[in-house]
Image (cartoon, rainbow, N blue to C red; front, side, top):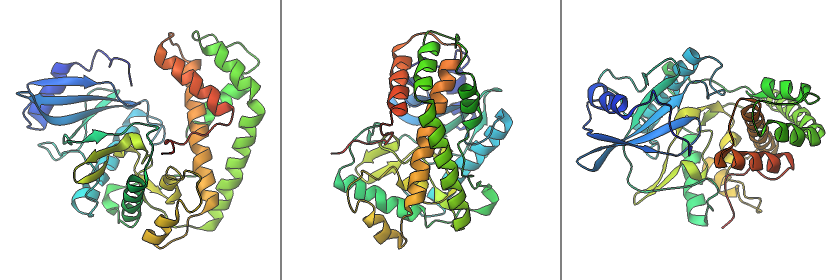
Length: 337
C-alpha cells in the first residue's frame, strides 16, 4: 500500500523484534510501501538486507476470521503450513517465514497487528497486472500442480474454505442502504451512485455465485492445498526460478481457487496444468472463483468508501477499480504478453 504505516509500528519496535525475538542482525529497518492489508519493511545490517518483515493488520483478513484473536490463530496456521510445505513438503518455491527463537512463526505486536519475518529473497518482484509470458506461465503452472499434490500436516489445522464471499454481509448491508445518502467521506456518495446504477448486476452475480456454490458442494471434490493468490504481484523472479510469497491465504480448496488466475482466455491455456496434475479443470469452479474474487473486491471497495476517509490518489485508483468491476470488466491479475 502506498500509505504510511500506523504510528505504533515504529522502526525501533520492529528492529528490536528482529534482533531480540528472531536473533537476526539488524541496525536499520526501511519501510516498503507495497501490498494491501499488510505493511512491509526490509531489515538491513551494515547496508546488507537480512530479512523482509510483514506486519499483518488483524482487522483486514476476512477470509481467515472475523475477530482479531481468531485471525491471529489463522495466520499462525497459515504461516506454519507455508514453513512445512517448504521444508518438509518439497515445495521449495514457497517463501515461508523464519521461526523465531521460540519456534513461533508469528508474533503478536499489539491487539491489532502481528509480525512475521521472512528471508530476504534476491530477485525481481512482480507487479499486479504484469504479463505472464509463456515461460513464466509454464513454470508457475508446474509449481501449482506440485502444490496441489502436496500433503498439509493435519496438526497445522489448515481450514477448508467454504464456497462463500466473506465480505458478503457488508455488501448486502450496502445494497439495502442505496436509498440513503452515504456521507462518510468525499467518495462515499459517488460510490453509492455507482453501486446503485449496477445494483441489479451485483444481485444477479450473487445469485449466480450461489447456484455455482450449490453445484460445487454437490460435486464432492476433494480439496487440495491452495495458495489463494498466485498472481504476478506475489511472484519473485530469481536466478533459481520463481518464488511464491504471501502465504497468509493458504487454505484447503479445489485447485481452481488458484487456477483461475492463470487463465488468459486463450484456447488450451490450462491444458498444461491438466497434463502436469493429471486431472481435469472444472469450468464451474473456475467461474465460481473468478466471480467470488470480483464480488469480494466490490464488497471491499464499497466498505472502504462507506467508512471515514479522505481524498487520496490511492483511494481515487480504488474508486476507478470499483467502477470497472461494476461495469463487468475483468478482475484478472495479469495482462496478456
